[in-house]
Image 1: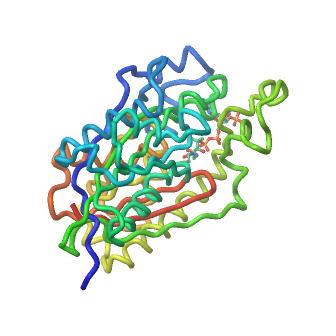
Image 2: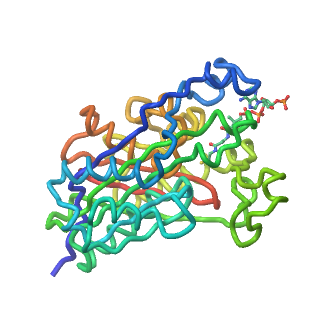
Length: 329
Ligand code: COA
């Protein structure tokens, strides 16, 4: 008897309504629209409202995905929330989301692989479904990065935004649909180039951590850039190999939306034409674990991808982590 497939039953996303443009940022730090656009491709990003927490962003995205899947929250066996900005260190954002959804039969846990979190969580969720231990799994990527960005640091604050995206996975009987492959990688030796050092067990909150601004994201942009392209290329190639596919089989690539120059370099390395690569970072910036599911939802809603299409998703992020996955809608 063959294993069930992990089918994509529904996709949804949510972005808060408040828009922060590059021109707005010109009034906050020493930067220009021209610099941000030419170095990153970002024009604007969304900011969650006061009192709108990560689990609230997740809730909107989850409801949209569940509605499209025709699945009720009570049918869910498991909720996985990929985030590095949970509402609190614990309880998990997944538990807050579970309560808000009233998903009373679901287990709930957060996964943190920074910007790769959604692909890690999707891979894990697909395994629960394929093994037969869960029938319906909700996988969410949700971030309120505005709370960990240092709004006085022009090197980082121009890059990030808030959003959430979600996918409902369910057991199917067609091996040629759903999550076809995944590849997960990490190299913790590079932990220092992208991190949030304060507030954990190394540096619990204190007057000193506050004074040193350790509760904000820190990044060596150039170092990350250099490693990102190679890591993404490798993850993409491994995910393709494991699915038994080549770039020619892929209808659309959904890369982590970090920086247009990284996305273009990846496209060149994979030999993929620009029109096969989905980009929405101009409107959202880098939303970390939310970036891929938000882009996937937009690609579906815009008709850029349709039933039966093969989609390659690929990410890199703090850790360092990298991940690739091929899905067939
Ligand atoms: N506005 C204006 N100038 C800025 C600026 C801003 N927002 N941010 C940095 N600068 C300045 C720097 O201070 C530096 O000035 P200096 O030469 O006087 O020191 C200059 O611009 C060049 O900085 P540099 O770091 O060399 O720019 P860059 O071409 O590497 O681009 C990033 C910076 C951050 C856009 C780029 O490194 C990047 O995208 N890295 C990857 C980041 C990423 O994707 N992180 C998320 C991973 S999931």
